[in-house]
Length: 58
Image 1 (cartoon, rainbow, N blue to C red):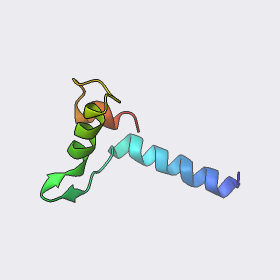
Image 2: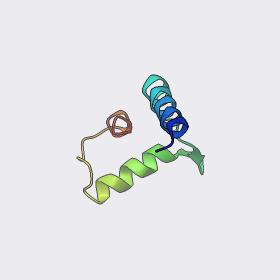
Image 3: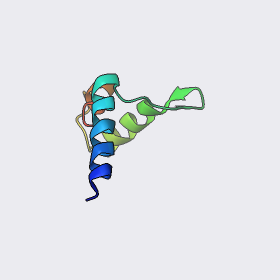
């Protein structure tokens, strides 16, 4: 992999670890909540997870 690409990926990971994931608003609703609900319906994540738990996957 290109070293400059590795560096960019590294900085992106550092940024999200420091500032957390920022979800867009969609129809006056946080799209993070929409994703969370969908993953719970599909049984892809535990039903008791919060958005903070879900964001920690990233």
